[in-house]
Length: 104
Image 1 (cartoon, helix red, strand yellow):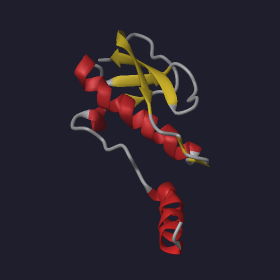
Image 2 (cartoon, helix red, strand yellow):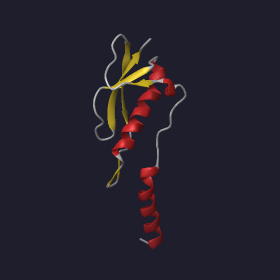
Image 3 (cartoon, one colour):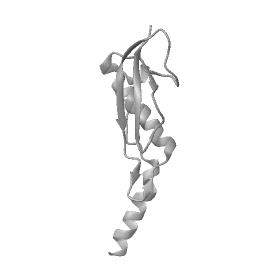
Image 4 (cartoon, helix red, strand yellow):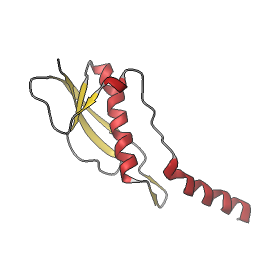
């Protein structure tokens, strides 16, 4: 492989930690995130979200992966009529389940 291609590949791998792959959808910014299931709220459903957590041998930053999973879940909430979300489990290999809630 030519040295210029190796250099380009190395720079791409080094730049990956700075990348954010998930953008906040309209309406998702108002969705509250709770660490536990709320009381007195109507359950609107559940979603499973996933994101690339590993590129080849490179593991992405776990905090960034967790934040992007939360953003994906928040993006899903308005479509289910939910205004609050809570995780059902911990992130695992780039996937996580979330409960969707409608709270007054």
